[in-house]
Length: 148
Length: 273
Image 1 (cartoon, each protein chain N blue to C red):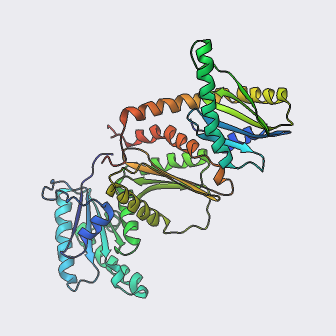
Image 2: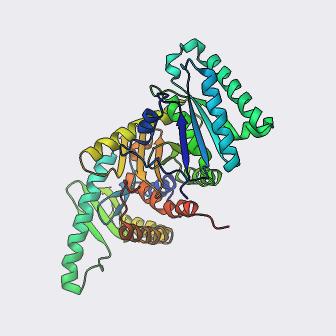
Image 3: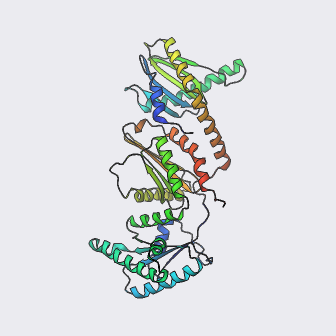
């Protein structure tokens, strides 16, 4: 069970039409897992926004959790910024994020977000579960590079 | 992988200790005084500058004879060492002559030309260039029992991850055990030895500072490489190149390495017959 990066980039790139400028997959710790953007978007920008977004998501999750009984129930975040929109939703154990210009229509942005999430949910859930399993194993072993 | 016993032999001053300290980079003297009766591998070092060829050959023959009595299935690697002391234009010829002599001597004992070729192999080496790594890499490659299966799995991994090249290094020596590539580009033939050397130096510097080497990521806009501890006996290096290399996310590659790890760990378990 391996993640094919190049194929994933193409799938994410499908939504980059009209006013959507970037689609990215972000881990809960803020690491950029995959990114597809218009020519003007750089990977550095994407990496920085991933880190910021995961923190923002975490904060909103905790905040709404206090109000609605427990975190982990946040379903979607849409941010209206000065120069555009950012929409994010959970996907497997990661976050799917779309960034768009201010001329974008919110309804269409959300529709794209949901469609992409539904399309990628099954395969990425399998990968995420396998990954979590391996990480738990690693934590248990805790071998270092000099163990010989 | 089960531990294999290796005997490194040669005349005093032939260069065995230097070789060992460079390849194994482990300054604690190994316990060489206890040698079991069955040796699986003999690495014999010939000093190419030696003035006493006949005596060297006699020693070698005596060793080979004794070895074949107790360990008939042993493998013998002959390293023609200190090749840097021969002039460049004479090196190939000198090495071939030495090889012929060694094969002739071994043949006298074994009696079967084909069997000799499969038991005895000759390599040239010098601590001052990459031939040492090449020779020892070949030795390590022969010592791993299921190396073909490892290479096959590595090739699958390379295709799925769509990497340009993937290398598997042995953990202690950083010698290349297996490699697979997707594109045949103009590559440096000596790249394995160079990379082995560079990473080993880096690892040594890390341990001098009291920290453990775990992972290296090297990126520029045409190229990305990830080196990480893989299985208990190996390190893996994944190389992605091409114009899209800068947008490759390190975390995705590391996740893939993590997911592939258990398949390779299975190959390293001792096989029960």
